[in-house]
Image (cartoon, rainbow, N blue to C red; front, side):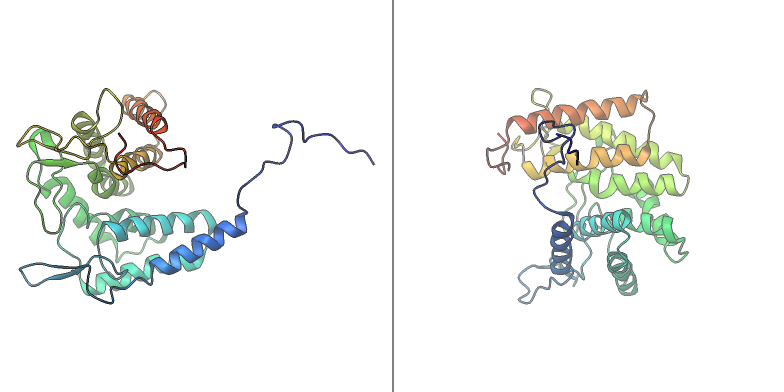
Length: 284
């Protein structure tokens, strides 16, 4: 029996993986199981507003950016694997939340509509279309803007007057772009492109390629000028997602610009990565 020698060659030998596919799926299943069963037993994380609302910011039955990011991850996993259990988790969340009524509109509560757009795209469920249309119209035409037309980072309890934050691109701009493509509203897509450009203008540090977390037009500064790891991570996530969503040609100027912005940031992140493989909360 002839046995070909391949172990000597990185091109020919079986690649080594630190975890098997089965183990990875088990970990993801456990993560999702814990995520969707989070409850605030003590009320420690309840946000109380003076208009009488009590917001559950921790439990899975709430409606915040945390839920939007979780839903997006679960739905992306469903799209890759076809796992119907994951799809049911997403659909059940929307069914339950819409039965309760939608929350006040802000940067963070818009986040789940990215996932809803993908579910509508797949199912064509007409019950979801009015929600997509109304929230996208709000993002496009009614959401407060800063000087120079940036989306003001309005949250549940803070207007954050004249402030731009990194988070906005993931929580509000990406949903606007997706809904714009899905419903053939090119003006939404162009607005999303502009939001990326104006946020880059005020939040990216030219010298390093890293990002500050916020900018205020009232004081004309980046607050503490902190290069926050989590704030930077939103850009590392959202730029590739945005480019994949728009599917712009290689020669497109917006695509080329965003690619070089991402490359600058990733190079800077690699340079300040800890030997453990992680990053400090403050990058520099």
